[in-house]
Image 1 (cartoon, rainbow, N blue to C red):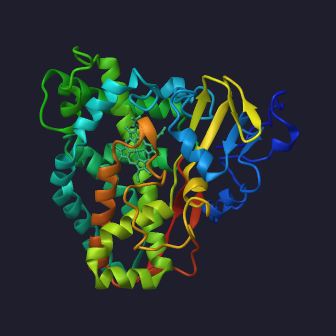
Image 2 (cartoon, rainbow, N blue to C red):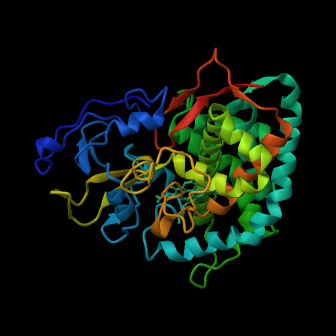
Length: 401
Ligand code: HEM
């Protein structure tokens, strides 16, 4: 997304807090998204950028962690720094604030209960194995299109109980979401997703099965049934929340294992370490940043942020802050992250409902990839490319084995 003309600094933003930082194009993000964000780290915990209509950015881990869970002073309604995006998407539960948020969140959480996630494991394994069997003889691949973008789509379709042959219809939407090429506006993308989902939402309301949508929609909201409009907003949230993010996570895990052969070797030798390694890789490579709009003034770090201001919370500056995690850039499979303290999946009332599913997908992917693909590295002739945004991700990752 293009950077826009800088906004004039409001009076309550001190000069010393102004930085020129475009979250869609931080300097050097194409080569290294994580390093690009680190360039913002300095003495100040809260800075303000005139880019993208002007917003605050929290840059210190402790502040990010604290404000992420603050539903008293911060609302999730705005969704993003892109004007109008929040109104257009109107996600349930993501854009609802407590107390309205709670009954919807409970219903969605019921749908993602652990035993449902565990029951999906064989399917995730089969999809991964099939793809890997086709890739192994090729000696290399562009990982994002050949694997990372395919598996989450497939899983989403199975979750909602739709024939996986439908993948061809949904894939272009997934691609636009992951790598927008300007051919579709966000409105067109939302409408296309809604058009795709509509018949399934209608069917799951009138004739529930045992798929994810049916499970969620069968949980009453304060004693009444979901309306069609609420159901659509929830299904849209799951579609948009669970594709791009998982694609990005797969890319970062593959990239790490390709760049650190000794870590790859450790996991090949001892598969029992894969669950802990998954947690650590998810901490080390956070991709999501969220936007909150202030509903009360906040005095912090020597400044006052005002009602109506937008605040950007990047998980990368929390998880990679040495004041929050020892040697944060080192991947240490023995880090022992229980209970989870990082913000890769958020924190507080909106913490990701798909966290268990995403973790399971990552574990199965690592297990299956390492057992089906010989030792691999990055193709030295084709350096990896990344893009920034609310979900930072690799866009090209050529692997060789
Ligand atoms: C590695 C993959 C994933 C990452 C990094 C991720 C990250 C996040 C984060 C950071 C939040 C909190 C947002 C906020 O505080 O505003 C969140 C919420 C959410 N995620 Fe995920 N997510 C992932 C996978 C998934 C999957 C697979 C699904 C579902 C299919 C999903 C559905 C949701 C939903 C519905 C919410 C809103 C929860 C609420 O508002 O109560 N996510 N996710």
